[in-house]
Image (tube, rainbow, N blue to C red; front, top):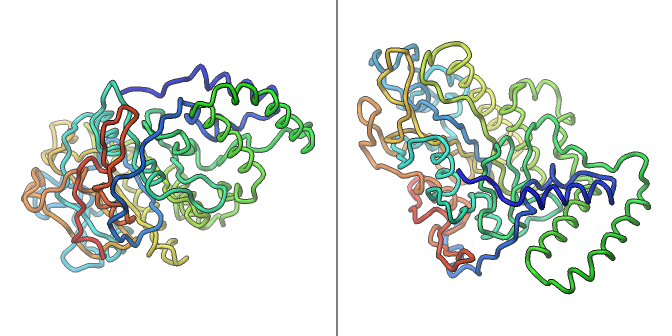
Length: 435
């Protein structure tokens, strides 16, 4: 997996900001956005899909969620189901694993995909593939989904960024070959929000502005001499950081404004609080939020209390509360909630009571945002081993997300080397799930 470039340049910028401005907001706020800017061409094909969703919360369970124990159980097959029991949901004919008891009361809001397949069976390539719809390539870094939406849909109102990644890890592809203005804002710990966002107490507002003006005068001759896109992006990044620092909207990142009772319902863990932060950002106009959760890679003792039971408890609390919260606030109809993982787990339990990687067939879901509720698309075979009915690739699934947002999967943009790319890598949207 290729890591983000230009760390030396970023460290230089960090030092410059700290010494000249007395503030170190830039790296924590914009992370990788100091990478050299590269431009993509204007779309050759417009947004030819009429989507009802306006914003996306993309929940990424990293490590491989077991579809048999969650969204696609197999009743009566104890050799496959292990300790997992099968429960009914609030929709006739749809059953879940008993670990998702709270989510089962919200099946009427969900379109569940039970025939998803992937070509990637290892974690890093699989996660990259889910985020970008392309296989890792040493010569290019592809944009993640949020960057495609940023390019296709343009700027969002207000000063908050167009996309935020919560708990995304160090290998997130970000804007890829797109301009750095389409980089996501990374948040590591959602309970801490944006750190170092205020100037130190010993620096007054006027002193801070003086330093900004001085920096501008120092930079102006260089910027006039070298009118390159990367330099423009660097200046733009400073401006956006400063505007956000001074904005009242920065309070959207502060979970302390939420009642303790609601924070408890989401779950006092990174994923649960990340979902709550996502809801706050949706309220404040952020278009795309990815929230990540690790710990799903269980090869042995899958039913130990600190493995599948823990992870599913975290998911059950967070997802069920998120759907309730969005609906109560009138936001669910325009917010598409996505649940995805890089692959499933093998149907047959191993001698160590675990499950192996299984990209051949697994499950995902969509909720809200113009998709049908109480709907199942596709089916696995009787053992959950293969996609038996209506196989759907990761590219097709992500194309459906784009289509729900009104972005045509046939949109074409070009990389700096003039190679054509589509937002879902050529995937076809499953229009049957869209309303």
